[in-house]
Length: 423
Image 1 (cartoon, rainbow, N blue to C red):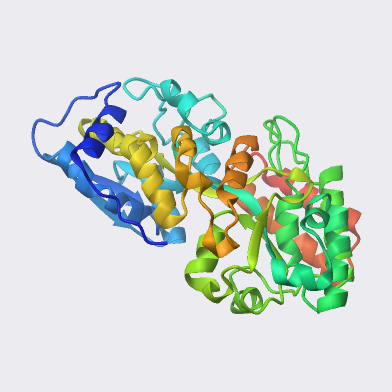
Image 2: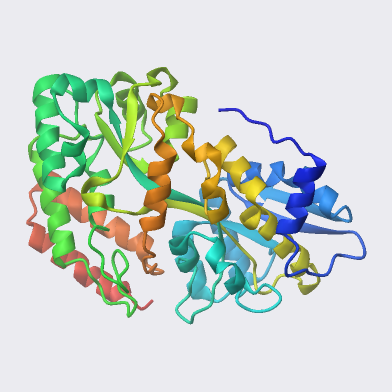
């Protein structure tokens, strides 16, 4: 979908009102602030520059863009060395926990930022997710990725399977997949690893993360992980996954040709499908909540400020961050143009949420995603999460491909992660 935001006097004044309190000192002399970002976030930031220039004509914003992995590596290096620090940086949500542990980000609870005054304006889990162990709030959400199941209407009709059979429980999801496979030849999903990513987050208790709790205790031998591995093994035994990883060419072909009946991902996948992966499948897809009503987030972008960035530019850096995160029009622009689901609650009453989504056959799916976003609970993010995910994925492969016992696989993962938990 292509949409152009018209800049009128009224909209500009509305932008000014949204950013008016608390007011920060405007730069008296011309300065340049640097914003480091990764793809899509960089485009969203650049699209805001015409409004920024009218609000702050004496302050230039330079957006520095790197590819996703390169960006986060560069930010890690900059924070650890205090060299080439940007004034503001975008962080993908999965990196927020790791960066929060390092102490290199500004605590936005402090004046003049006073982020607590905006807490009621933001999707609750997204605000809470940026909380460090010491209580500091180190970032503010720009967009979120409420989880959804996408399913092929034509494939389910041929199989005689209903949406409710896919969503009622994980057992019914697998049973429905077996019928789909038997009656249409289509696989239920690209790879059981997508099931693993969601199942291991199902049933987390307060204070728990996916792999560690808030005290760095390792959780991977819990019933939650045993069930995850058992259901993934059952799906593989029934040949329900195509054994093609997400974002591979084979995966994209399966989505195009209808040989993959479902996908578990963020709501933003609809935009990816409609724009470049499988635009020819418009009208064939529908969206649903995830199995067992699981509410989780798939990614999202945050804005943060390095603690050791030049202090004379911090006021303007925070003004730019507020424009991107707390301005209704900018948040809606990002949603309409880039499928960046807004974290700002006041956008959720916009009529756009009630409009049909053509790619989904006219389904009013944004309401579904809005409900999901409000149901998500923040999960503890441990600095070793990336390593833990690699370990669990490797052990799952050992179970699926090499016949390793689930109990032994998870026990081995537990011991390895216990050695890394406090590093």
